[in-house]
Image 1 (cartoon, rainbow, N blue to C red):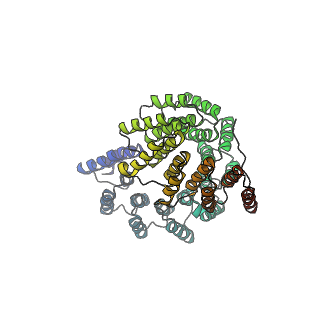
Image 2 (cartoon, one colour; image 1 turned 45 degrees about the vertical axis):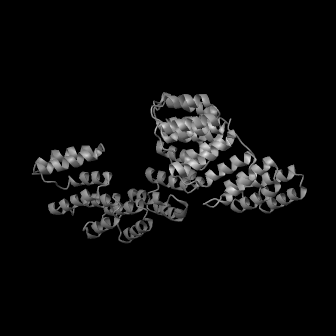
Image 3 (cartoon, helix red, strand yellow; image 1 turned 90 degrees about the vertical axis):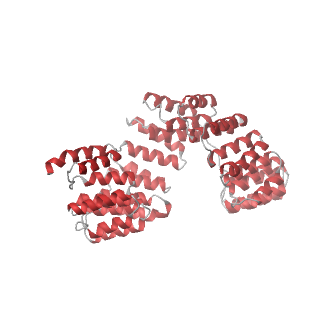
Length: 486
């Protein structure tokens, strides 16, 4: 009987490994129809396929087959059942399987349940299971930590993540490359880039995943010059970048306006065979538009066989920021005709384009269309664009009335836009109102203090200038110097 089942199991395993999960489940059903009973080697692959396709009912049916065939005591079948239920968001079912298992004191069973709870945002339950695992003397391995640490990749869970870092050291798991990469990623996502860099520097061997994690970490935290420096170091060490690396590098070129480095990266993309990667194409369009090379950006855009909403947003935003509002609006209309539905992000670029080009009436029409035509509720970022639009046109009273009518609380960007408009039109009285609100929301943003001081300076209001300087001194604020990457 086992002999007749083995070829089916081999085929089932191959399909699951190739991520052909629907085909794997079809083969399982065919196997039953031909009278070949499943065994402990069958179920892990069938259950993995159910988990990947999020089919809880089919998974429950397979669970009944496991019980009927008496395979439930097998550790890998138990682990597969737990993982399947967790991936189908049925953690209570997974816990029931675990609690009823005679094998529950095995590391693999604990790991499956801990990882399942963490991935379902039940971090507290995952930690309690980890503690119970330690109390029962069940061995902890790298898989245990890899299931727990990603759940701590948010500032609110940082202290727990640091405790797990300590546990990794105590258990001798901190030398594992995957654990180190996981810890590094956790720290950068929590904003502790220096901690991540210490782990990075202490690693005797670094894989491409390690380099990518550190480069992406710097990029996500706005440390663009660090990204480019690390990219150079990576190349010097003989590592070849992949698309993940290059997306991070291009985002930093965009931030710094490093056009020359961006062109070099484009050549690397083509020579590495990544030229058809849509994420890299979008990143290139974004980089070239931000650097002012609209011709090159549009040429990349034109040859893309499929243009996503991200692609359209990048090219529309690029033309808008350089004052080509009419072109930006033409592209937006072209996008609508192509069948792509706009989202809130692309409306920010459209409204910003109208503002930069002085297309006040068009901007008001698109703002109204958000809710009317697309049922999109404007957020503070849209109101900020509209305040800027009206402010540039000298319609300061309407801008203030728009703020007062907002259905969401105005943020610093909204009041900052009004403050900027007051600078253009030398309206000190309204500027003081905007300034009062903006420093309440962003008390450490020195730019607003400098802007208000300049407004007072234009009005030759020495008392006002002195007042702002005293406020900056009391709050230990300094004017931020500009910088560029050449």
